[in-house]
Length: 190
Figure 1 (spheres, rainbow, N blue to C red):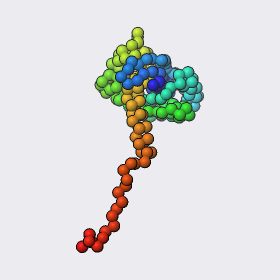
Figure 2: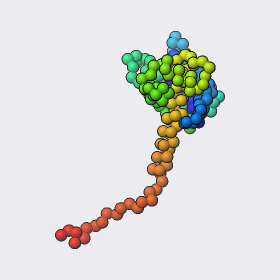
Figure 3: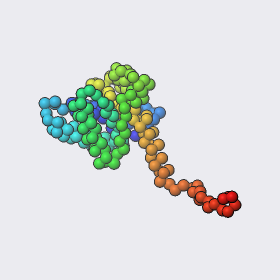
Figure 4: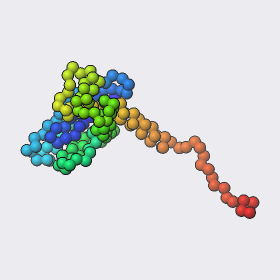
């Protein structure tokens, strides 16, 4: 499975592409950070992020997309920018017919390090080990995107397959005949 993972942000957007299957060796395809200057208008910044993300999709042809789920923060403008970038990623994926899965930061940390409260240094260390990299990915947004991709390969891919199986089961007619209610007879009414 090839996963394109995005740690969304308007100033720094981490992007990572990883190949792998649950229980097998993972392979780094590419990692990077899309940056936009805070001095530009928000619409211009969003277009710049979209243009660069399109190039990532075209270059790597992912089979699925993982995005870090936005969580509440006291800085509303940061949350808004993050949510807007999430929307761009979702649109790009949907236009290509790709499944999108959102993972929480805690879920990602737990999948990569075994501890949902791991700090950035622990996550980066585990990403470096799991992908057998010579050096840690930098900046932190790049490492976060790779952690997200790893989490998706290990958890999201399985979740997507289970959801597809459940949907297929729901579409399949049941082999068990429905029970027909019996009408009461005089004997049962006494």
